[in-house]
Image 1 (cartoon, one colour):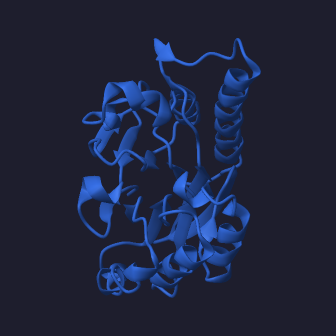
Image 2 (cartoon, helix red, strand yellow):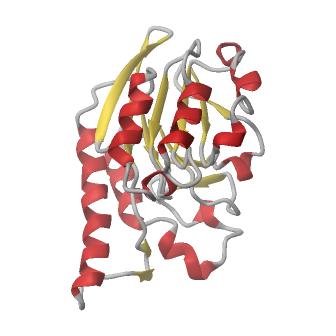
Length: 236
């Protein structure tokens, strides 16, 4: 099966129609499209409407998670509903199963959060503000664990906005790694033995990496892939 993915398109009201020409022939290149968050610039509903119009009515299923930009105006639930009203599946600690060429493709999705990676990460200790930060990291990772566990499919993909590994962040300043991803997501992905992990968020990172357990990870932030989408092959 062919999986197309992109994140961090950051669409505004002036971007209407920008991606559509490349997406209209998507079925010739892929069987499903994954959106790895940050579909809007500032999380405004007018921006989300542009994103919904760009990615709706395609010849392949579209599955998305939201990113930090999509939550900026505290309208994440409204944006998710708007996208869903346009036929886009939005995941947050949930999963969906699709039939692709006789196989069952499962996608488990969560926004994720920051926190950092082994040896250089925040800890659930100290001021309540720090504990609240790390608690959200743990909570979102546990939500992904539950979503992956509920999938009984031939192929399983973990879709997040934040990165599960530091390797796909190379090119970003190391000082901001704790705000770009967390090791807890990677641990969950390895435990579930997912077939692929897809994320965005790291505009200056690199595309390819691998979890400690050997799961392929792809950073599909549009500034990284420099295309309307990237395509990956999975399964038989």
